[in-house]
Length: 255
Length: 207
Image (cartoon, rainbow over all chains, first blue to last red; front, top):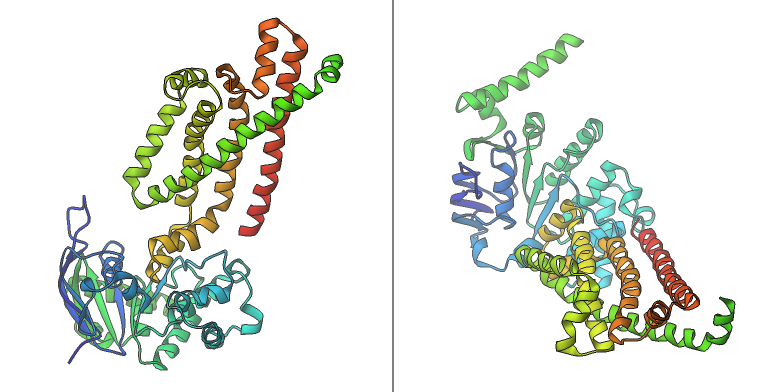
């Protein structure tokens, strides 16, 4: 059977770096899974993600999406069929919220009636009233609302795969918890494959079907949250889990 | 002083018209060429840096020398004047255009690329609208500089306000010197204010 995402021995080294950002990585993800990629900064998690929509090209190895080699097809076409959300949100400040969400459908040349209906549907989905928000500009929205719009924009053309690069890194912790919960519910309601990069272990464990833990360009463990907590693969994973536990103990002491 | 203005009002008017024609031709050509070079520059950093280096070197040549250098190629007169003004403007325009496009928030550009916009779509739909204030600022500086350098172009028989000024200098006619400089200063000021107004309007649109 074909996997939603398959990495075959993928390596990427940046010029001038002494080590590989992604080092001979193999893994598969099935359709509908919600994967978080966890690791400290510089571990290669963002590089890995950006090779899927070819913002970076791998030096060697192959990446297959539903059995199709992404390196062999038109790069612009691939990107239009993959949802992409980034930490800086990257909403276009000179376009309305409606215009932002309509970006990919417009690139795909949908008819205007279909685009307009889709924008309304998505605004409803992320809990923003279309009549009220459609014609506003990004600067008139709060950080949390902006990131919701970023999410809606990525979902616009109904992509099968969503790539999320620390999407909640820049919002306050209360908004963040709410967005995490909303995202989990959202994923449950659709048959999409989510890849979510984070350096926050609680976020990683809360959201998932499986967690991928990366260190120095390699995947050190890839499994369910339970597996990782019960049987950490090495010292690095153990210390990661331990640090989360310590934080929990700290909060217990406070009560 | 006033005497001169009353007697030679037509001469002055003619010089202003001639000056404006040179400036308009130079600006129009400059913008066309600079826009094409800017598009070229967005595709390759080496090309854009090479162009900036070259034009900054040329820009450092004094205008009087530049006019003289081109006489063997394009002769005396308006053509040479326009050619020199266009070459000078490339530095002012390119630098502002390229810096403005480069200054667009990296996150916004990455989001656009990640969603599958082509390089040209990113330039036209995202970078150009967001860089408008920088583009307008570049055009404003180039216009004012063109008005003042065009005065020197009278030294190679291009006509314009410089003719009155240089005549005055040669014959020690203070009225001519005064009105020649006052008119060119006024023109420069006029261009600056007009384009400043547009620049503000454009900035308001980007908010």
